[in-house]
Length: 122
Image 1: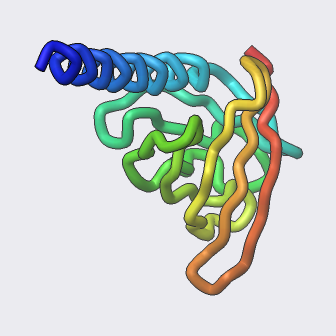
Image 2: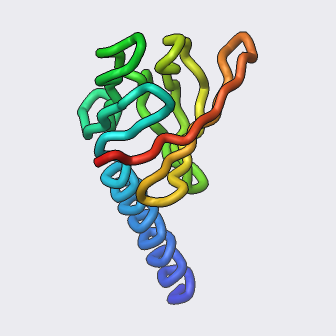
């Protein structure tokens, strides 16, 4: 019985660590990022956890890229992300490469796929 209680305690602790890591990664995403000719500002927000607004670029300035609540799984965020160039929505995976780079890859419902690295500018 004591082993079972210890194991349950460990599972609760691991769940708390995963939640803290997810929140910490949201913190790491906050800032201003560059992809090709686009600049994107990421801030925490209530609607989706984090919001990513295109603040400059050749088109779609003002567009919110993050279209759904991001789910944390296997060290990545999963959700619906609008492409800054086309505005098309992709089922995407966001991976933090390091504190200054995050990588997105995903595909639309029509199986058009894209990927790219966003680099921190501030």
